[in-house]
Image (cartoon, rainbow, N blue to C red; front, side):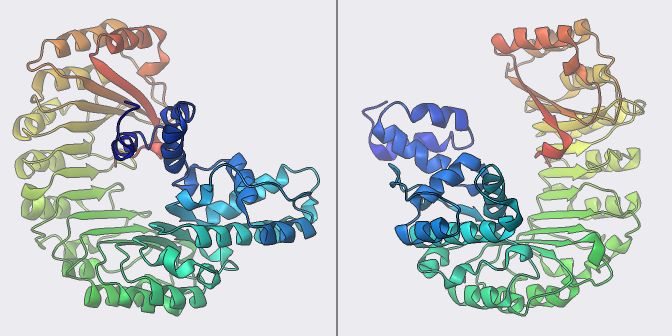
Length: 481
């Protein structure tokens, strides 16, 4: 492996970009693997810990270090490290930098806490200058209002750093000056995620208007600004400028805004409607709209009547590949699940709930959704028991299914016996063709099957036999939907 060209090693290690443990082990092999691993480990500022920011300070030019020294933040001018770590960054969050720098300074005994905010801003500004000067092409940027003192576009190198930006996550109240300058630099943003606050910056409209190929739009309204509905001021820009290019739309938060504009985006492939309140009935404007390319539908919180949703599935279900419904609170409805079985035959992924008297409906879903590869089921209370869920999967699912997620209802207790779990694995081994089952427990303050030592011993045994891949997630970390 060590004799492979650098391009091959780069491509191989890309597969481990989320596995920091493996990448860190590569740091010690040789200089080439170390260089490749360092680049991947430093690509996303969200992965940086406090010690990384200490390292970034050593990367600062002497002029910046002198500023920090004069303000009592560092006590000496340190030497430059082995690598120019800042240059590897591709994903930058100004708020993350600010928060981590604050934590770093709090850990320094020589820094007086009463000047913490001022010193934090000074360090954050110098680090942001470093990124703008050293990063050749940033791909993703997060920038929210309370760090508006950092005007990235005013720093040397910002134009080259930001010109190929493809994703921007921001609030509506960030500096108008920054947005105006950004609109002159960035015309190729493909993903725009806006959290609407009390104020819309004047430059926001300009930035939206100049984008040439916007693919993904996420709009979130903060609960405290629900009455202001600032999103309504911006939405016409998207429907007039980007109706033809937008393929992914996410609407979430706590506000009342008409969904009629969604129908303008005829090329939607993914739609997520995640509202914080349950009295939203405007979905009736969409129930008869057909989106010929829609493949992914996510409705974590049921804010709409099941009848309206069933009508929508009748018009759009045939093309769906993924459907997540009631995932935020575990809602389910038998008539909706029957509609899934009838109108969504091409599903690959499904997240829904079945009551403990609805096994026949689950059987129909498995029978009709032949291509189903992954299913997430709620367990406990009025929902299926773990035993019934496991038995139904092994008996009725088609050969394509390889992933099962069991999400436990709040404060329920697992009643699964170890011999029942063992029986599931034995029966899974007998399936043709044989394939590994990925079993994921999504814990939501429940006593799930993984809390039983006997169950975990059985899982470990079948892991060693190559029968199961096992993982535990918590609801807030669940990225399945």
